[in-house]
Length: 178
Image (cartoon, rainbow, N blue to C red; front, side):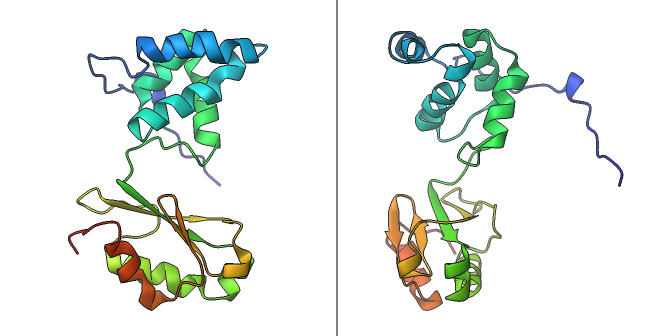
């Protein structure tokens, strides 16, 4: 198998004038987070969570800023951000639609449920609608096996969802232009 390579050494990071890691965030990290951890590297996840909570994703510029503030290599911050599924390294939709693909949900109709969401939004898993309102993902388990198949729309869990329920559930969070 051939390895696909990219020339990351000359990659350019899109930058804005204002930092993503604000002085208030740095102050919070210094006063609240640093005392709880033995090393600055251990503060990587709280810093990433802070950025993601504020902006909905983790821009490359923010990764550089976190690394500089913590005194670690940007690669160490990127390794953490890219390892965990909870961090978004590109913008996502305003609303996150997460279909559970655990074995219980799969046996109870998850493939048809995922297809119904794909059809309703006109996107595939991992994509965002053109209007930026919805991103569709599948998760390994939502912990709702007793109510399979399950779907999480933003922070709201829906259980025993039939494909025919999808348009109504999506309409509850707003029109999406399809």
